[in-house]
Image (cartoon, rainbow, N blue to C red; front, side):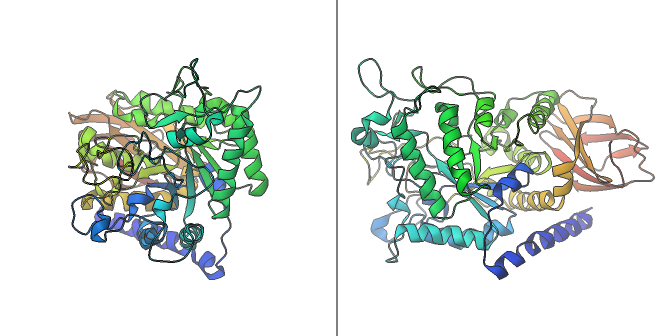
Length: 518
C-alpha cells in the first residue's frame, strides 16, 4: 500500500514541478488565476507576512527589535517560497499588507485589518537591510512567487482604523450622534460607508479603486475581499469591472457565506453571498467552517451539492474555497485533534472546491501563545497588552513564525496537495456522487471522470469508531483496480459491497481505475 502511494506521489510531484519549467525559462508571468480557481485547482495558503518568516532568535515568541531580531518582511518571505512550492501550494493569500492604525488599537503592532491607508503598503513589512523602496520590495516578492509558479492574492480590509476615521470621517458610517460605529466586537475598527445600491459612496470607492491599482502595480493576481457583505453589490460590480478591464484573469474572492445572514452592525449594509456572486465575485467561503459542528454525513454532502449547483447558475462560473480552517477559525487541533486536521487536508484535496489553509496549519500549530494578553514590555500602538485570540494565528503583534513539528500532518498536507494536482481532470470535470453508508455520521462520495473514480469515506463522529458498509453501483472488485491512497484499515470488499472499520475523525481515500459512475 505504501509503495503504491509513493509511486503516485512521485508521479504527481514530477507533473507538478514540470508544469512550471516553461514559465521559468521564458521568465514571463501570465496571470491565469481566475481560470485555475474556477476549475477548483487552486491550492491557497494564507500568510501573515508580518510573522511568515519572522526571525525569533531567542525563541521567546516575540520579535525583539532591540536584540536585532527581524519580523516578517516582503524580502525575507522570499526565502520560504520554495518550501511552499514543494508543499504543492500554487496560490498565496496575503493577509492585509496596508498600514495599520495605532490609536484605539488591539495588540502591540496593530491588527492587520485596522487599515489606516488603502493606497500604500505597510511600512512594517519593509526590510531595513536594503535601500530599495517598499514598493520595489513588494514587487520583488510577487515576482519571485510567480517565478515559482505561485499566484498571489491580496486581502482588501473591510473596515477602517480610528486613525483613518480621524483623517477621513466622510468614509465612515455614523450613528444618530454623529459617532462612527464599531462592527461587532472589532473595537479597533469602525464601519466604512459603502453607500447603497441606489448611490454608492464615491469617496470610499476611490479609496478602494486606489487599492486595486496598488496591488495590480505590484503584480498581484487577485483580491480577497474581507467581509464583502458590508458593501453594496453595485459598489463591488463597478470595482470588479474596473479591474477586469485591466486584467480579465484578475480573481475576486468574497469572504461571504450562505451561513452569514446579519450585518456587522445594525446601521451597516448587508449584501448576501448570491448578490455578491451576481456582482462579479468568482467565489466565496461557503459554510465549510461548520464541519466541526456537523453531525451527519448529509450536512456535508448537501453543502457540496449546494456549491455545485452554483457552478452554472450565473453567466460566469462560480465556486468556493475549502474554508475549513482560516485565520478566523480555531486551530483544528484544539477542536478535534490531529485526525480532524487530516480530514480537513484530504477534504480540501478531494472535494470539487479550491483548497485553503492558513500558515502553520500544515505543521500542527495550535496558535497558543504563552505571552498572549499579558502586559507587553514594549508596544508600537496605544495598546500595552499582547492582544491575541486563543487558538488563532496572531495578527496583532510582532510575533514568532507560525509552525510546529508535526511530521505526520506535514506529510499528509504535501501528499494531499500533490494528489489534487495529479487528479485535477477528475476533480474539475468529474461527476460528484453521494454514496449512502450504514451510519448517518459516516459520509462517502465518489467523483468520476474518464474511467477514473476518487472514492472518499469519512467519520464525523469524533469520539467513536464505526463498523460500516456501503455499495458502489456496478462495481466489481474482481475486475477493477482499487488503490488505497489514505487509510488505516484495508476494507473487506466482495463484488460491490465494502465493509470497513473507520476510526473517529478518520478519512479514507481510494483511487479506482477503469471505473466510472455515470
